[in-house]
Image 1: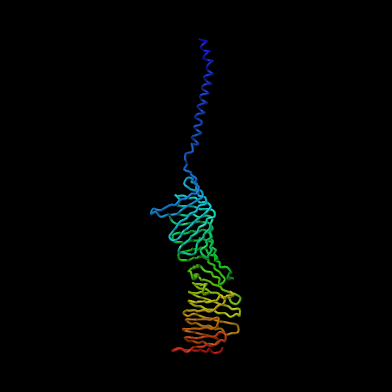
Image 2: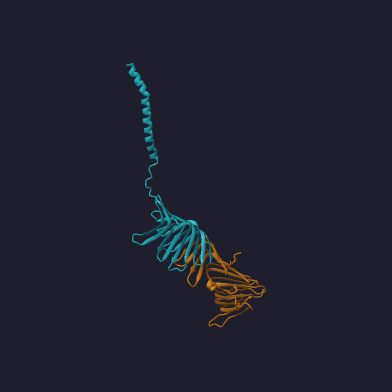
Length: 187
Length: 213
């Protein structure tokens, strides 16, 4: 009988070692999964990058709203970031063009904020006096055919050059407004 | 001292461009100047057509200054309409204009409406040409050193700088020194201080000599 007890005593350390090994393996296995949970496998986060981006949007009547091109377009969550954007939109007898270094488009390109060396020009088949505008940033509202900004602006309207701070442009009526600190000269 | 400036320039609180109408409207503390005049107003609207530009100013009042080496003109009115191509300014609403010459002669007119024609000769020499004023009545005043002052009122007043002739028409009162003349038409020569009442039907001429004080 005594002999059997000794045998059992001798096996106890091995049993514990086995248990410890099993536990360590289990930890190793489950531990990874925990790590994985906190950092899930990156699903496709709807981020895409396109070169030579070009988009033309139409309204419900099939009339083109605008044409937007860019050297690069990168979508990020709800926004699309455009490099060297170029927006063209025809309103009544006028072709308006806006270019910049960068733009951020939201609401399915209904609202675009353009930044850095922003230039707006209007070529009107009726009004011979071309309009040129330059600023550091502006927001283009496609469906409202409106442009707004708080930034400093310079506008060349035919012979007259105006500068000021804060402005808006109504593409439909071909009106522009400079909100404050206006300085003008004739060239 | 408000004065002209070589390059046309302007400052304002805000501006609005209405391209379909060919209009640029400047609002609030508007200061405009070019080679011809200096203008201060509450509002200035530039209207452009192919042939002409018109600057219409409104103010409380609009103040226009024009000067060069030989004269200084100051004009105040509710409204002024400046036409650069025609070298003219039409004033309306409480018009008060004063022109001082280097010979210290001074011409002043108060009227409801006044057209001021000047000339930008090739030599860029700014020269007043004439005033045409209308009022109920319009008032005229002329003074020059060593001359008797002339004070007149009439419904129409025309003063030609070139000929130095003052023409008064309608309900005239012309006062020079001791005499007061009432007539329907009178022509006064500023250079030689002579006046003439031309023959007119049914014209009543009244000359009142005030006793020498």
